[in-house]
Amino acid sequence: MKEFLFVFRNDYQAVPKGSPEEMQAETKKWMDWIGGIAAQNKLVDRGNRLGSEGNTVKPGNVITDGPFMEIKEAIGGYTLVRAESLEEATEMAKGCPIFKNGGSVEVRAINPM
Amino acid sequence: MEQTEELIPHLFRTEYRKLTAVLTKIFGLEHIEIAEDISSDTFLMASETWGIKGLPENPVAWLYTVAKNKAKDYLKRNTLFDQKITPHLQNNSSEIQEFEIDLSEQNITDCQLQMMFAVCHPTISSEAQISLSLRVLCGFGIDEIANAFLTNKEVINKRLFRAKEKLRMEQVKIEFPSQGAIEDRLEMVLRTLYLLFNEGYYSAGKDVTLRKEVCLEAMRLTNLLLENKTTNKPAVNALISLMCFHASRFEARVNVNGETILYQNQNENLWNEELITQGECFLNQASVGDKLSKYHLEAGIAYWHTHKQDTAEKWESILQLYNKLLQLEYSPIAALNRTYALSKANGKNEAIIEAEKLNLNDNHLYHALLGNLYTGIDNSKARFHFQNALKLAKSKADKTIISKNISDLGSD
Image 1 (cartoon, rainbow over the protein chains, first blue to last red):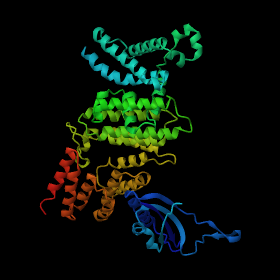
Image 2: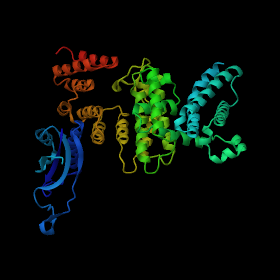
Image 3: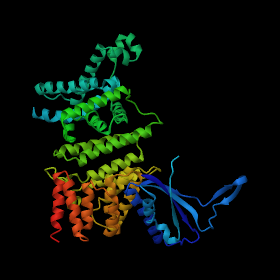
Image 4: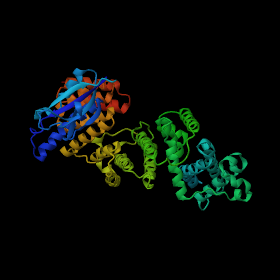
């Protein structure tokens, strides 16, 4: 078993602000998806959402206001899971509700040092 | 004479544990046997004396006086005295006579609490903690403990002996944990009390009365924690709330032969309304602070189960509570129960997909769940899984229920 990182990306401008019911239904989809992974005993860390403010430090100590919420694929959060292979982890990611809004899930293996 | 015989067992349990707690505090955990012996001797003397002379006017006071005298005698006759009692008493023999053993309510409660922390110590196994709790904190006899664990006296005696040895070696003291340690230690105590309650609740033992008493003892001990300001935490309120909800179904869930009656077949009129109300009250009290414990989630789920009716809100709430519970702490049972709740909230088809991912193939409950989910959708798969469940099931009660499920499928 290895650990994999899910990196959630979304276009924050594109996310429709639905009615309370719609938003609750959206929340349910996320909770059910994470719950499903947890039920398989494959959730390592539910992770967190990231704040919309931040900085990017570049060579020469150049600091820019990142991560630029205007860009289409700003990182919005992360989750850690457990799986036998990249294929299996990728399969798990397919259930994520983020796709409806044009978002994506990047699946990366954790390489322990 | 009959009245005496009935009174003593009840007294033995309630007063034995109080005396043992106070005496163990004096002698130290490493000499717990002395405390236990003095308590036992006191009750032996009570049996013999009261049998002949009849009940004294104040049985409890009688017991306490005799126990105090025996303890003082022991202290005087042993070098223990030199080590345990503050040195200045050695030089003043008149003070020895007046050495008071404090059996006030406050001290009894404090000593019992401190004993709980000592007994529920991470250095001994959960099993040992539970056995020791039943013996020392609850005053159960060895036979009764063996009965509750469905094992024999030798196993229990060995377990208790080893546990006391370990505590002795680690020099565990009867005292309140320090401010820094109390949260971790309290977590251990709650875990043990939770397991203790489950022992009584889910035990397959035939002695239904005994099983109930184990549950009630777990509740009583949890209550002790509530009564003390330092240990009255939200998680403790959540745990007792959970216990109240479960206990409310005592009368309805087991028949006189100790056989389990399934939730859906229980007579709701036998559910104890008072306990349900208490559970709700404690759950409210638990809903403060920012630490969500697994007891909060389980109490929430148990709360919903006090409403027998199938409503969308009930099952959606239970599903979300299980989603959170599994993130906090995975267990196969929680995974199975979550999947069942999902079938009620999101429909059987989605639940079947989720269930197939669980792969708990050696678990008879897993196959029973799949059998249940496939019923009406794919009866041959349902039958396949029920048959697996039947093969894997251990208890007669489980086998009976599964066999009925198979026969209900009919012949298609």
